[in-house]
Amino acid sequence: MKVRIKRQASPVAEPYWETFIYQGPADNTVAGLLDDLNYRDDIVNEKGEAVPRISWECSCLQGMCGSCAMVINGTPALACETFLRDLKGDVITIEPLRKFTVISDLVTDRGVIAENLKTAGAYIRHFAPSTGKEYNHQYTAAKCLKCGLCLEVCPNYIRGKQFFGAAFANDCYLIASRNRDAKAAIHKAYDTHFATGCSKALSCMEVCPMHIPTIASIAKMNRAFSAPKQKETP
Ligand code: FES
Image (cartoon, rainbow, N blue to C red):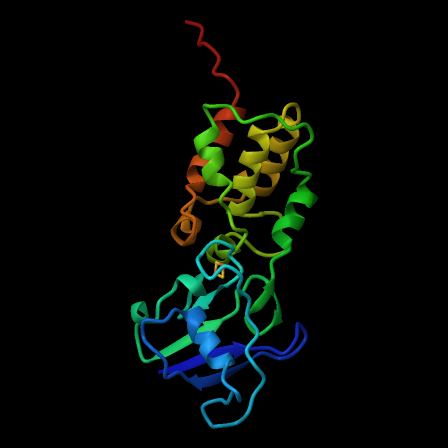
């Protein structure tokens, strides 16, 4: 099986494609494939040339940390959750996430996800305990891995622009629902950096490895902050 990997030695280096031959089991994951290529005594490309080891990130190898997010055969996914047997074709292409700065090969800088919260001033000022009514969705929204897959597929997210994407919306919900007295500030941040830019394509929900129903966070934010309906006077 041929594996084409988009490589880049540093954030300022030119990217290039390099092809490898993988002869391991088809039951492996993409993470296992990368390990297989890297752990040989000498890593060589398709032409037999010695090349630098492939940089990529992983921690849990069980879909729990989000560090192995990358683009596999054109689809953003976690490498440790993508099995070779589920991929079509004889050639696998692997690229770094395209909406983040590449640090090296498949490693990207996703610090912008946390930076966006700081930029918007979306953080807890006065912590309030979870209420029974909200607990279930708070638990679900808090599963966000900050892997960046939702931003990668979002047609509206462009790094450096005002719209911060689904991860931000879920965090706004969590922060607003656990904040005692700064809800208006969070709502302003949500309006500015999410509500006015989301076109409800909801591709974020299709790729989320934790299956977070972002639409529920959006609905809850809208419901919490919409003005109460005035009674129509006859
Ligand atoms: S290594 Fe943790 S999600 Fe893949």
